[in-house]
Every structure is written in structure tokens, then in C-alpha cells.
Length: 313
Image (cartoon, rainbow, N blue to C red; front, side, top):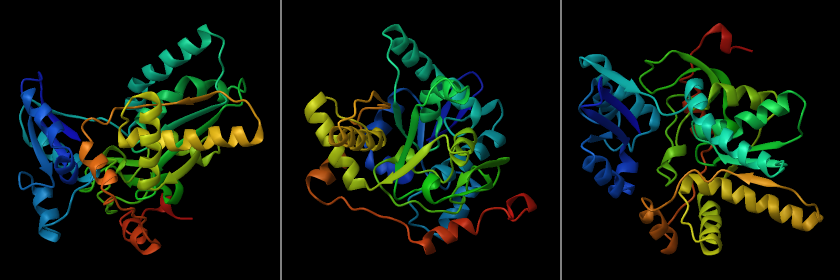
């Protein structure tokens, strides 16, 4: 989601990816109960939304598209500001409270994580979780492994390019050096809505390029298999986004079991799935599908990456 907020928070408009608003109607109800206005994106309320719909009336939307609409509304509305929720470095700074609290708790009991695993979409939640632990790694004080897990349907880490790109579909943001699939990349309407973004946080992208972060992409059905196992053991229904981390955590634990190694695995459970029951219904009814973009699909997105000298070579 992307938000355009009145200066004192008296009026709030939320642009929510259209397919997510359809998949998560109860989230829309909650947002509107708080007094906000929710607009499925792309919409006819902005010029960039109209342009996107003119090209494809059935387009299900993307986070890049919702960001474009929120920015346009903020720019054209008096006493209005755009509130960013992911991707940029200052958001990772805010999210680092997650990692600070986790590290304080682990230090209290003398626990050192061997592996830290988190889901990755725009990257702010993962970046916040690993921040203090990565600081130790960069200082040569630990050998912790960091694993980012993304959807195979939106593989910005594992199949993206490291380039300067726009953070939104309408190309209104400053250029950002990140792992990207290109602003024109159209992600499939999978149920991990919070991970359907074409780019990755600049800090995480650089850490990945420098070999400090590992990344893997998981299919939707495999992720939900892991989510259901987790729920039956822990009694917590995880969000589809968080379930990507669960899938990788189970895999790492089984690898330890096979090798006989004992490792401390820290996993970020970033949300519950009670707004995602339609996704679990699709899983239970066996109507859930997996989509992995072809190289041709990715090329359409790559073609939208700015053709500038810094992106050559």
C-alpha cells in the first residue's frame, strides 16, 4: 500500500494494489473503519492511474503503481504529504527497532544466531531485522549467514539487475541504485501482496552484490505448505509474506538435521495471516497456482530501466 496523508493526519487516502484489495477485503474494511479512504490502484482518480488503465483496463496493479498514484495525489493536494512504507534507507532505519530488540533479547541470554532469515519485498522489514547483526558481520565480529527469501514470481534479488531505476511505475521518484526488475515489470497476482515490488532496498542490494546476503526465491504453493506446517505446530496463522521466511527456515533446519550440525536460526515472522484467509481458501481448495516469469517476461521490465551511462557495462 501507499498513502497520501493530510499534513496533520486529519485526512488519509490509501492506494492499495487492486488485486490485494480484492484478495483482502477485510483489510479494506479495517482501514475504512479507521476513517481512511481506500482506493484500489490503478484507479481513475489520478492521471498516472488513468494512463495505466488506458493501456490495460484489467491490470491488477503493483506497488510501483500505487506509489505513483499516492505521490501524484500528494503533489496536487494542499497540506498533503506522501508517506513511504518501504524500500528507501530511512525506512530501514525506522524498522531497525525490530533488530535492536531482538539482539538485546538474544544478548541477554548469550545467544548468537548462526543464520538469520527474513522475507524480502521492498526490503525494509528484512533490513530492520538484520541491521545490528549485519553491523557485527561487517566489523568482522561474527560469521552469521543472512538469507533473504522472495517470491519466485517477483525475483528482484535472484533474477534482477543492479542498476539505477525509478521506485514507481510513473517514473516520478529519484533514481535509486538497487536490484530491480524494472518499473514496467508486471508481477503476477499472487497472495504475497507485500512482496510484489519490482525493486529492492539500496542497502540490501549492495550487501547482496558484495556477498553479505544470500537470496533465494520460492514458489507460492511451497510457501503455503510451509505456512500450514508452521500453523499446526505453533498455533499461529502466518502471513503469506512471512511464510517465505518460514519455508527457508524449515529447509535450513532439515539440512542441519541431515548433517547433524547444531545451529541457532533466527527467523522474522513479520505478520499474521488473518486478513489472508481467501489465500488459505485457495490453498485448501487446490486452486492456488504458481507463476514464474519467463526470461521474456523479465525482459519487458528490464527494457524500462533508464538508459543512462551509470547503467552500462
